[in-house]
Image 1 (cartoon, rainbow, N blue to C red):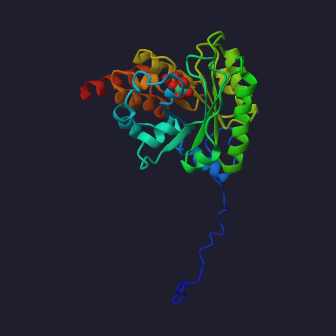
Image 2 (image 1 turned 90 degrees about the horizontal axis):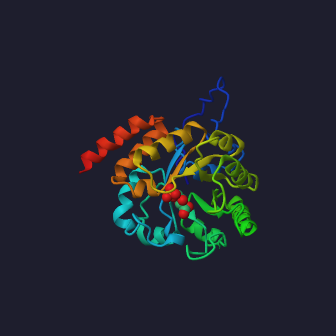
Image 3 (image 1 turned 90 degrees about the vertical axis):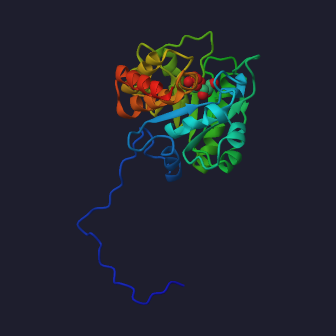
Length: 294
Ligand code: R5P
């Protein structure tokens, strides 16, 4: 029982100040529940509304990808510079210290390896296990136009139903089959379908022409995947153009962990995403940090 002796009278009601709620910084997310928004705030920096997600989940279908052979050695040193880590539950439990207190986006679909039809995925994690791991979101691949399009969409909608029940955001990841054109028309179709069917936010690829229409037509935040390894200046330019045209950040893997200087690269990407640093300046920043690291 609290000791009430000496309890002071309440008096400071600030009657001249109306109670307000600050706007939530992510588009299309104002109507979400508190827990969902709180989880999103472990992904997107509330100061900028943007994120640098470090994607290291490639092993779920590619095995030990170049740069990910030893996640303990190569990836853990990058974590201080990421807003969020995207990985599988296997890597999370085996290799990521539980003292890591930023958001984790958990890969939640899988099945086929690179040796088979990639669109034939199923849900690969229960929402119960995702909650046990205290993740900030789950990620599911959606193959619009792929052989198992409907199955992959249903994977996403099932996770959305479960995520809505427990306050866990779902990242819809648009996966583009080799036979499909990676243009704005396709990206508008794929991202819009993910958003309409309930994805909390969507990952897609940057396209040279018309990316701003992809971002504008998607009613929830969009982040871009990095894609295959590019020269650092080009990757920084792509990230810059994406955020300037409406992306809420990047979910970047190979262009960071396959860089000659991964820490320098992720720090330069952070400057582009959170501080709007132009690509040439960011590239010089990268070069300076890379030289210091040698
Ligand atoms: C795809 O396999 C995974 O979802 C990756 O997380 C995604 O492609 C981003 O990684 P990267 O920047 O290497 O394309």
